[in-house]
Image 1: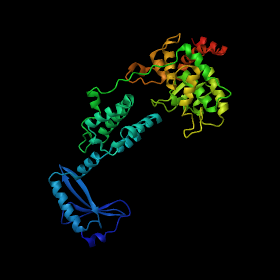
Image 2 (image 1 turned 90 degrees about the vertical axis):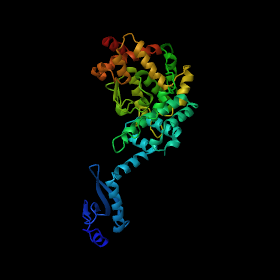
Image 3 (image 1 turned 180 degrees about the vertical axis):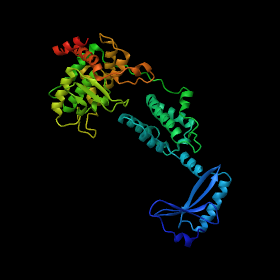
Image 4 (image 1 turned 180 degrees about the horizontal axis):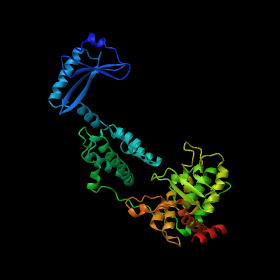
Length: 410
């Protein structure tokens, strides 16, 4: 049919799907009709491929205007112009850093702490780049911003740009050009490596030495005058010291993940995204049983009146316990203390695979470790050994049952 106003107005829309009508006079000029709309289109071939381009809805364009637009597009296609690829390329090149960031955190699994750090980096390090197209972030910009942030904190500059480097790597492959090439030829953050600009930050080594464990446990003992929140932080410290859990893994522990009968705990949401089950000794089991009676109907082992529902804002409490014990420490120091105990303080040496399993560390790249399988009960003896070691240095006498169990397993 000839696509004229009278003929187009007389077309009955389909009840579903779409129907195409092609013009008798101008080959490639057509009309796509759906239940709700009639739209002018043009179709031709570019480099041996069929390319279809949408022009405008009927009513926005008249048939005469649409025919002229179609003729122009067909001429450009004959000259090798692929309008769809050009439009896709334009869309890709206009993708902003904020757009890429939104896709990145949706596409991958991150812990709450990681998401918090990423949001902080976007807001504090790259707020003025949020609306900047990713493809327009150049190496010179990277160098200047890194130097600027380094003046405030070298460690924070490293952390923020490690995040940006990962985001750029994701964007390069996620948003390829129509011909399949990466959005950028290379990651602009690579300049920091090429120019050796990354700051060398000494890894923290602070932990509680065995001779100081008694003073620490003295501060962890409940006080009648202590608040419920402070006592929860005290018990959390004991849990972290005896299990080596990360701060938020312990703080967010739920009762549904505690087996007081089987004496084991399970961490569902871990940094490594691997479920982590650990046996616990009698002393820690008794501590958790006491907490169970104290917390009532709470879902969390360490409940708190905040949006999270569990202890979270405890910096002042930890500083108070540190001052009371006379031992400078933060919660992550307790994980390092646990690692130090299992690595070189126990009478019986543990294999590297066992140490990694206790800390829930990845074994990627270690082919042999990938073949070694551990069940939770395989870790009971090492965990019991750690508890006995800590209690001994804390001046707490373990029960006869505990001693018998350790001797039997040894």
